[in-house]
Image (tube, rainbow, N blue to C red; front, side, top):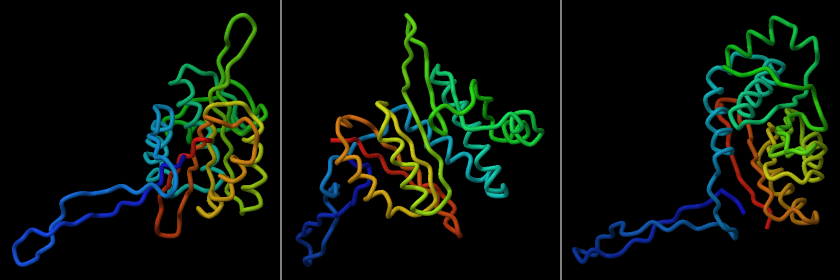
Length: 209
């Protein structure tokens, strides 16, 4: 179920010279049911939008560090521990600390575990719950496809894909979700970066039917 929709206007005649006036706005969902963002998804969207003006002067490597710090803070805000892709050198470096402070992020609790970003919390006795996983890929479509298919394997409610190769891959990703077994109810948030003068993230939510 997609969060992308198209608005159309229905006009009626006013009775004065046949002049048309707007009397209703209809939202057409393109073959799917519109779903609102939940608290976690809206938090991610707000954080990424706030990061954009800060991140514009940064390098790709610094953007990657920023994503780790931002998602660490969001995970902690949701009472989760956070594992992110990182190296000991990153955490020890002045660069990481400067960027973490710049984006008002947090340090993670653990290094990479299966996914670029993973939130978890412990559930007694000796169990754990994973509410969110994410992959971040700034490469081409093949790189996107490789990382996205990792998300399909996990039984997790929230799955986030951050990428830069254009919105066209989302249609492919939806078909992958539909063909994969037992994905019903899983929430996929696509965060597509558009640079080159546009300079904004665009978002699309798809809930597996």
